[in-house]
Amino acid sequence: MVYVEPEVRYVANMHGNEVVGRELLIYLAQYLCSEYLLGNTRIQTLINTTRIHLLPSMNPDGYERASEEGAGYNGWTNGRMTAQNIDLNRNFPDLTSEVHKIMKVRSARVDHMPIPESYWWGKVAPETKAVMKWMRNVPFVLSGSLHGGELVVTYPYDFSKHPLEEKMFSPTPDDKVFKMLSKTYVASHPKMSDQSTERCGGNFINRGSIINGAEWYSFSGGMPDFSYLHTNCFELTLELGCEKFPTEDELYPAWQDNKESLLSLIEMVHRGIKGVVKDEHGNPIKNARISVKGIRHDITTGEDGDYWRLLIPGVYVITAEAFGYSKVSKKITLPARMMKAGRVDFVLNRVEIKTRKYDKLIPEDIYDRYDPLDSYDPHAQAGQREQGEGDEQSQDREKPWWWSYFSMLGNNKPSWLLKNN
View 1 (cartoon, rainbow, N blue to C red):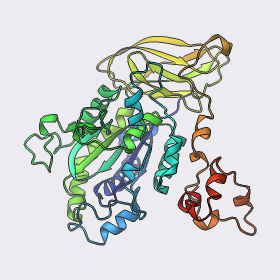
View 2 (cartoon, rainbow, N blue to C red):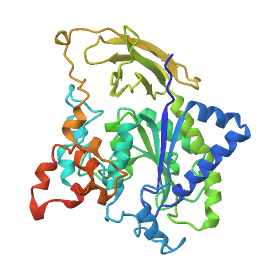
View 3 (cartoon, rainbow, N blue to C red):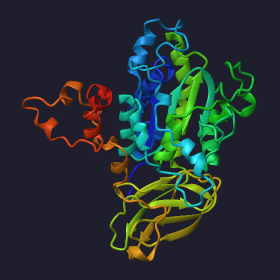
View 4 (tube, rainbow, N blue to C red):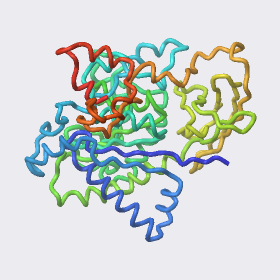
């Protein structure tokens, strides 16, 4: 029986001056390792059944700049940006505005959306590219982005469905799932769940310490929206406290406040359904689409035909389909007290492609046609990218389709783009 562990990630320090998350993920890594070795059955079960990815600092350059002022003295802007003066949480492709435009078109796809060609015409940070490639290479199911400056959990969409409204409730098709995940984090956090606690600039006590991102304030190019619309992953923004760069003595109490919430959120990846999609000969089918009737957001299977689909308790009709295969539906029930993912497997038979329309199914090479992300090497150094004597690897490296166009622009060519691809 094929069983692949679900993938979860935590990303911190996206804004370099928001440092609490950076320290919390270091604490979390230490805690998971030590408790596993000590025989903590909860942690052993969590690690044995889940792949946990931790990125303590997405913006180390910004952190270095912020730390120059010293803890407790840092303002709200210094170190927020990268060394290239880019706000990473505004640098991802804006897929949300396109979704708002096409939602009324029944046949339009509003999940696994390709990156617009025009996105690559702007300045894309190497940190953004590296994280996007990470997202594409690992089939993440659940994610948390750790920030600071407030005490609240926000969820997509972050960009308002009405461009002239800065604060407008803009829910995803999975709004109930996002609320369930958000409430899980809050419930285990002593300050977020305490209605008598003094808050920061915004008071979210009456909202239960959770809010739709666009209803708080609208912005485009955020990582959670991109994650939801481009991949299988559901991502929350975790605002962990009023101070962006607190003093050292405040870090361990912050860990104590957030430890249980961080663990509980990881455990939520085991809610909903999981399964494997195979053909009639038992071969796994990659990129099969798993759809839920009434929820206009599909997910896709991984290399081994496996999938994980987060859902709240209820009755659902689940459908699996793939290019060149039959379409199979199953009716399932998820009980309210069910604490693990239900197993729902599918077997699809091959069919003649001309007998069916595949409006929502796309060929596997769709990403290669639209963007150069798959050819990006986040570990290569700038000097290694210049074609020089004896640099056979650089000479033989296949360039993306747009390379020749930009490289012929002479003095006007975007050197930062050519250097980082």
